Length: 244
Picture 1 (spheres, rainbow, N blue to C red):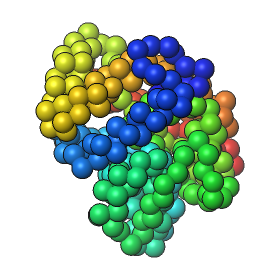
Picture 2: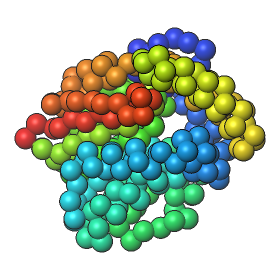
Picture 3: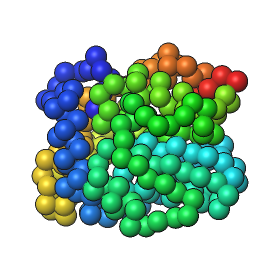
Picture 4: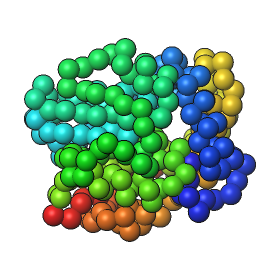
């Protein structure tokens, strides 16, 4: 989902889109991690590791993982912080959280919640806040990054991992073949939900460009915002720091 002022396209917007996407994730939760592995040929694990490294977390650190889904990145963050650390995963899909909670860890807590209104999460309470593949699904990016900035301590980092449309000719050709054609068919076959995996490429097309995402992060209180692409630009990793 795009920024609140939104790019108009073939997808619904606002509350209707939020409802449809939440219901979609509820439906596909049991197959979500399997499909991630199939669709990325396992590369999502490498991308997750890049996001974890970007947080700068250490043993005993505290991390907030928004749109945590089934907890893939949440668990990786928990490994980085160790048994003395703490990771809070928040998602708006009950079924995704149910799948996450089926793989418990002693230093991880999961909560149902809205990434743009983190009720009950205190200011300055985390060393890092992350969101992976979820920013597209949030209508108001300003509210998202404002909340992420609020909840990290001064000097803490905000990390956003997201799918993007590559610019290089070879990467763009592969993207069109794989994400626009193969992924919707594969997703429909494995999950039994055709809309879910036709939504994926459409949501990427309507999402803001990497440079605009960096601008949104900066105007919501982050500094030294940088971004880089992986796998030919199909994935982008944005990192910003809350001023000390």
